[in-house]
Image 1 (spheres, helix red, strand yellow):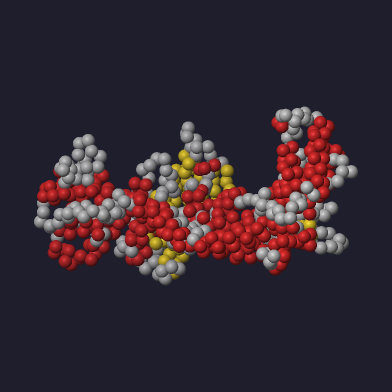
Image 2 (image 1 turned 30 degrees about the vertical axis):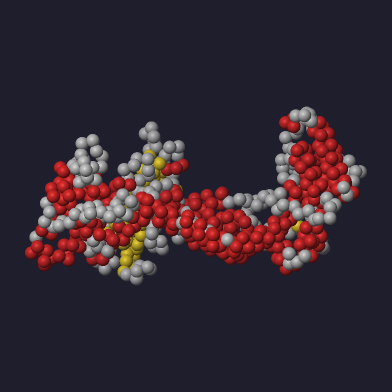
Length: 636
């Protein structure tokens, strides 16, 4: 073993010896056979550190390095950790011919390496960094380019130096670890690139088999751009970003102002983001990248997951008429209900959803959207079932189903009237069917008492189905937005309206309008009523949110303010539209009253396009996010 290695080992042993004697001096019992009796920890900011320093024999070679290794190690530190430091120091200073490369993920070994190479101030210059054997070998063999090292050195935070002190820039142990890992990342990236080229065909095949997930946008290539942004918003003296600075970033600022990102959402992401050790609750570039990944997750949905959910959840509704096996279709306009039942019934003389696939006329209605799948499912569920069965109809139940379907189209029986008013009649009929189907769908979502109302906990596939029905409803002639050329009047909206469904991500995150439901033990959102009033001089709005709490402790959250209508042009369709603008003023909870501008959760409802209105139903979409919808139903 080399003399330098002996010196380091001696230094570590000195430290262990000092550790034991300092333990006794501070009143801790020391028992080599029972590690649990050691002092619980020593840190660099307590008297324990001074005790250790006082008991180290400064006359022994290497003791200073051992002490440096101890104080640079993260607290807490026990005796076994000190022995590990000794081992790491011995490895780093082994005098063998082959250079020993410290693993980038071995923090203690890196700290020990820094302690060995740093100057008397516990800092390291760039010149000292280049003399570290591992770094020097990479530079000499051309594996690490000087320009690459220069860039890594420039990006690393430097130790503050007083203006009166001259000398080269120096780094502390944290910056050294960052630099060492940045160097290691260069080779990790190259290895990954080589492996990716060699197995690209296999990876593509596996992705096809597994319906592979989309690659994260940060990983896909936006990291470099975000690092440039980070340099623009970070504190130049610390290379760190505070919460306030992040909130001033244009991207976050615009999301907050537009109501696309709530204050609670921002705070939650910030709390989850790892902070720079030793900083004043600030993040470095890695934390900034992690914050952006979490931010993107609020707005980006996995298309593959959506398709998978849709294919799974819609099997019984939308795709029940599709089968991989050939089905004998029973068709014929002159067939009686009894003949149809006899032809499609199973061996037990019963009919379920599977047997209905063989009814040709019914399949034509579904294909032409004259009858919606959700309507058929509701009609089947309402028809009387065979004794002892939950999903099968006997002949009597089938006749009831047949008559229910026939009643939907009874207006078409008068051919003479249909000849003169066919278009209008079909339009009204389709309008009524779509609206009825939408309301039935929303009612079905609300039947589960364990789920929050208004669709706040519905599946993605259910949300997409609701959006599809709303899009069809908006095109119907009964829509006052179409009938009046987008010119909606105040009197069309005044009254009391229940919120029955929304896709707002903000309301989903807050589990309600105000977010107070989740802040009370066992409390939960119970619904919202919107009250619109208007006179010659004023237009007042009131939201009354019910918060349900067990044991009779339920209460209301009341939001008051003003509202107005503004005629404009839809940004996406170019058609005339009316925007509902709301200015909330106060939020009242029991005896307390607060200014509403502090409640960012109200933002999504403050500026909405009115896309559908009739006598008792209203649909509004986000002014900049058309997939955000609010459906209100007028109270009788």
